[in-house]
Image (cartoon, rainbow, N blue to C red; front, side, top):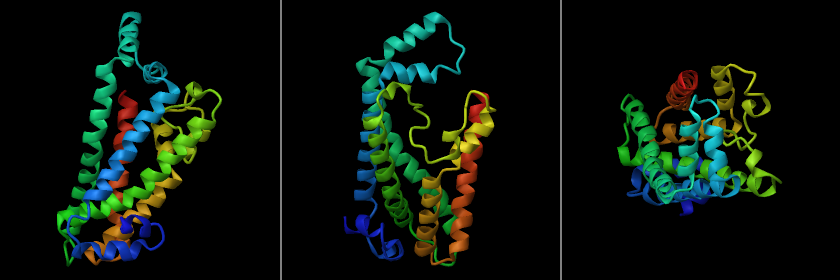
Length: 228
């Protein structure tokens, strides 16, 4: 728990100590999952599940019958609880996937870390990100007079895309602009520092490794936005 506080003001010290710690990934991974669950409850609670489904179907070509079926399913217990289950499952999987890719880069260094160490670094590095985004999301939802008018894909105005009209822009370009996010860049810096500390490598190599994963993510997101 102490490491989750220290990561805000002395992250280098926290990351450098991870190779000597066992099971350091467990608590931050649980807390990150709880934060994701909190966001998964907050957004539908304020915006409404039907409004969320309506926004998601804006770019889909569905018949009126299909639209009605989707709207009816929005508030079904099966839909609600399956969303929570998906969050619990995919939250840790995302952390593990990022840790796995960074672990592969770590094998290229002189002192490759254990996978558990890399997972602990990723989980701790993501804790500030999930905490800040969840708190900001809660604040935006609470102070907005009509939360149903909010764009569920861009609730927090910390990226360039938040200031653009998505209806008049190319989908790929809009997806790229939403990825130019100040919080994401801070997270990239934190992950890069963590990678350099647990692998005993240079910060530049950490930035290259994390930046490469980020570019892959952004490219995939752009491709999906063009296809769907």
